[in-house]
Image 1 (cartoon, helix red, strand yellow):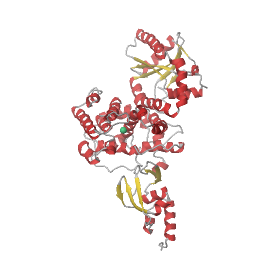
Image 2 (cartoon, helix red, strand yellow):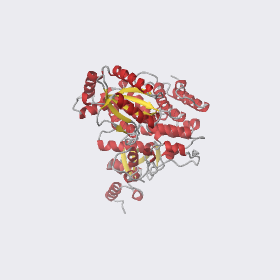
Image 3 (tube, protein in one colour):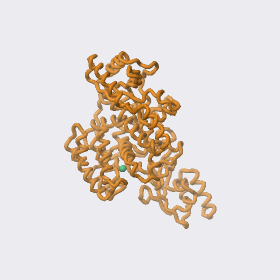
Image 4 (cartoon, helix red, strand yellow):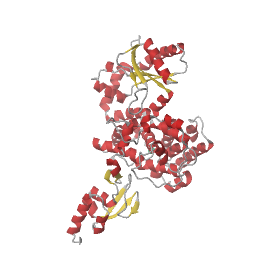
Length: 515
Ligand code: MN
């Protein structure tokens, strides 16, 4: 694997972008030279795989470079200062964002999970951080068999509970399917085996049968003068099949979308025309026609669906969509970001504003590094904004209708609760939520009163800080305690939580230093 292998994925790339990918590749390779994966492979294989996935999604060279470098700050001698110097602020921002996310950990309770998903989105600040993280997770799942057994279950669970829903809400269908099918056998081994067994009875010859029907349809479409189309097929993913089988009492003949064929045509008109042709060719099943073009799914998905019975006795779901709808259903928000990235001009220095430009008020409630006054210059282009689907454009708007949409999901991240609370981490990755303005003292008391009562010093993101330092979303806090240390009255002037206030007062009275 070399930088070349990534560069060739692009149809065209400027010389500067090629050089950037090459440089990031070389730096990462050198920095991780002595590291290996659990499989024994060079660590660089992981980074190259992440970079490749990002390139395949159409992300920019800068995002790919950040993908290649995503583990450097955490695992190597490379410093943030070095990245800033060599790669600029934007790439540093992305790498540090991914590094921060590595402390988001799954702890098992459902209530906690929803917060974690929101937290993941909220602390990412820039959606590209999340996209890099998803690519990272995908490759880690693809190589999970090499990871020590005791870690596999936690990672797979975390994938199903946290990353899969996030990918789904972001409309990233391809990565979602891959993640869930990879995680499924680890989390539900018996069920996965059962699904495989059921699947074998039915889908053993699936691709063969699908291929035959596909040829028939291809021929028909060509006869009718629709020449510019693509067809493909897919067998339903095992995890989503599992959920459907549960609903159908494990009767696979009641699962009509086990096999699906996709027809990708140039225009929306062609979609409806193709539907007509298909219904003339094969008998549609009643009540199975779904017009997700006129009525997109909550996560933005668009297609026409119909289920037909062919004379060969096959029941087949057919999905008809345009190229753009297809790309969006595969890559979701990434397809919009990549588009946006390509329209940016000039050197970027403030990575966040890229997302900000797409989704104006999304993360405003959260702390953001100060502007360098050197933001990307953006040209307003109405043709482009029309391409941004409504569901993305709506993100950040206030009204919601009770249904769970991507917009509302992300929007939730800035509802009262989330705008008045911050989430910080223990060094072990536990999440602690605190009110905005909270300090290390509030944090310490939130952990345990014994910790609060004996604070000696505090580190935020590994740097020593004053005890009245205001904490920010995503900070990692470390409290050093000494038996001899005691609260002082001064603490009362800056703590934000009532717990801390109460405990400090109690301790002051006990030690007779309150007056
Ligand atoms: Mn990684």
